[in-house]
Structures are given as structure tokens and as C-alpha cells.
Image (cartoon, rainbow, N blue to C red):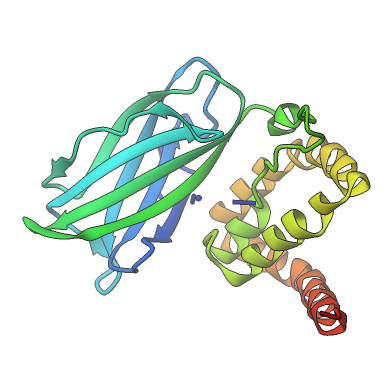
Length: 231
């Protein structure tokens, strides 16, 4: 359950640090809910985490993939003096897409590459879940509500949900069948809830308080399962 996180034209904004934490990267789309086959504008801001302001003069690359296959890019190493860019992308399939931003330079100085990845779900992601010939299913879907509540796909709470999904539910055929039905229901309302969280700090805190007991239960259950496992 992988990211994204405000300007009026870009209401849905996601923000996450790079893997080494040098910069924060903020990404949003216009329209806020991209439509299949239409041109979508990706707005990317590079933010200095110490000043919380736009960081100028960034060398970057952008790649959009679906199921590991490139949909857009990677674009050649590009420089932005403003520290903010808008890139047009056309999504040609429904389902979960990964938007990866690689940073290789700041203020005209090369740095070891740093990466941050966001998830954008186009249309009904559950329609993309289908058993393969080997009996496995694609592990799709993103913890949209939890990501919006805790601010990042890298948050421990979101990672816990992802681990339970991948290592517990997807480890059995009954769990896989449950997730297929659950995704159809979840994605019917989760984008709207996530939108409200990003627009209302009070609602965001309410959702966080509501799901915290569930997270605590999942953590204790997972921890006990590990302790009771015999090697």
C-alpha cells in the first residue's frame, strides 16, 4: 500500500522526503483526479526541509511506471532554477502508477542520487487485480487514507498496513480473495476521504485517532505471531 501528497489549482498535494532526507518533494496533479487518456499536469516542488521553502537550482529526473513498465520517461537529467516544475503526462491505463523523482544536484553541485516515489491511482485499481497463471495475484493498491493521515507513505503506520497486506492477507488464497473484494469497496470512497484529510487538519486528526487503535491491534498481533513462531 504504497507515494503523494496548497495551491487552488492543485488541491491534492502529497509531500515526502527523499530516501536520504536531503530534500522534501511535493507533488500534485491537475486535474486533481487524473482521467484515463487525458493530459495530466504533474506539479513538483523541491523543498528545503530546514527552511520549508522552495529550494532553487535542482537537477532531477522523473519516471512514471505501471507494474514496472515505463509509462513516461525517464526524462534526461534536467535543471530547474525555480525549484518547481510542471510536467504533462498521459495515463493510458487504469490502476496504480509509480511516480519516481530522482535528484542528482543542488545549487549546481552534484550529489549522490536521491529518490522519492509517489503512487497515483487511475480509475478503479481493483479492476487490475487478477489471478496469474501461477495462481498468484498482483499486489496492488495504496493506503490512501492512512498516507494522507500520517503524511507520508514512509510513515511507520503506513508501512505496518502494507506489511500486513503483503505478508498476511496475500499469503493465503482466502486473504487474496478478500482483498480483491475489499479493494473494489475501498477505492469507491478512499480518494474522497483522503481529499478531505488534506483540506481539513481537524478531519485529518479525527481519522488518525480513529485508525490508531486498529494499528495498535495489528502491531500487537504481528509482534505476538513473530514471538510465537518456532524456528
